[in-house]
Image (cartoon, rainbow over all chains, first blue to last red):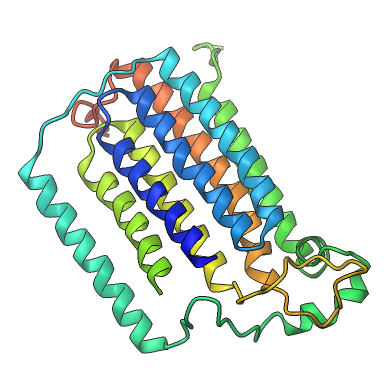
Length: 177
Length: 113
């Protein structure tokens, strides 16, 4: 089980590396799809079928939007050389991230090994599964126990859609009116 | 533990792309890769060995070892919000291309005043 997960993760890493180094933006987007659909397989292996369904939908929509953007603009990658200054910045950023993660792990000490998770917080959700009347515990949490959170998510989605429509609006207000 | 390390490596690749790449589309792709790796990490933390998917039916006993449903519910929200932010970024990228004629962020430097 863990072996399959490692294989899929290595594939995802290779896809992301190719995606960042591709000369053509269209092939970069297509190999970015490897990462997204590999994530779907990871969710299925980790026993999260709801997330896998949502991730398939989201990934297809993201790829369609990205390919539409590239078809309407350009697909050439402009800068393929290497910049020493940017490399120094990247190395500093990576080192600091590793350091932060290491210190955080050492300080809190809550990160258990893979597969040895203790359900401290969600015991109440698991025991109260009959209260919601939902066979699926995830939808029980999303739509019953944490329904206000879902309302906030709908608000964020609405705001983002309004933002996209505002940015992409073709006609503006005429001056002087 | 090695799956945690590989997932963290995926996050670092996204971070490298955000810092080094000069193309706007590649920066958006790197941000999406970082977001995916964080989602995957949180789901991995909630996994329990030989656990079942948190769906109750007749054959599965109610006390069986389910995987943690709480991170799954939270990540379900985060995935959809990630789609919204990515589409907003792409809309802004289209408008920037229309104004400057390039995706190169070194040439998009007229944000003054």
